[in-house]
Image (tube, rainbow, N blue to C red; front, side, top):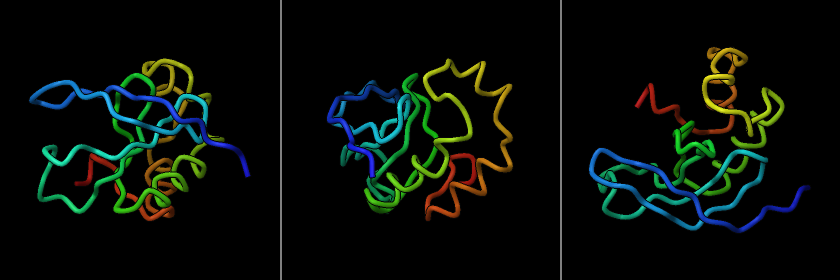
Length: 109
């Protein structure tokens, strides 16, 4: 099992930018808990995000988010920029792997 690194991650919502504690179980991907004021009624409190700030998946539990990041790790070099990844990644396969890990893709929530 690989070691995760404790860092911070910055992401943007419709309201403002947030910087939160995160781990990086896969280079280029971050797992973090969203602040209480972001989507307060959502049960999906954990996120898998790209280093650009783009949200990839949401989960109820941290372990599910980490499992999701690891499940999609071999699909691409996640340290690349978003434009390059969009050309490389099969979206259907990405969504299947996200669902397999017990997470949801933001396009479906």
